[in-house]
Length: 55
Image 1 (cartoon, rainbow, N blue to C red):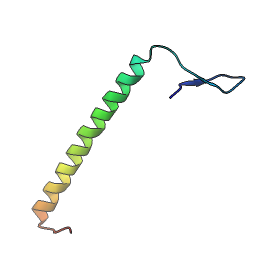
Image 2 (image 1 turned 90 degrees about the vertical axis):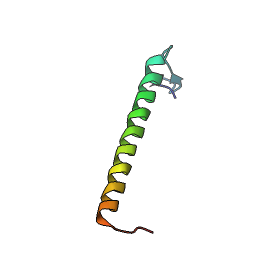
Image 3 (image 1 turned 180 degrees about the horizontal axis):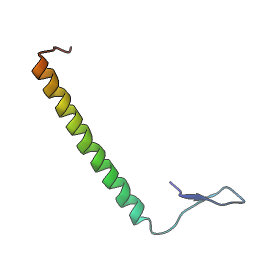
Image 4 (image 1 turned 60 degrees about the vertical axis):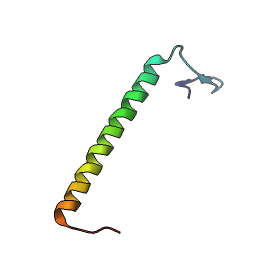
């Protein structure tokens, strides 16, 4: 995925290397996965505590 567009032609342009972008994506994906796990665990605990049945 390009980070810039050529101002006259609109062609995609990139800066090389983009290791920082890849690292930032991986870190964001890991944070997202951790947060989803936390939220799902918290919801499951609240459901178990309330005795509610979801089906």
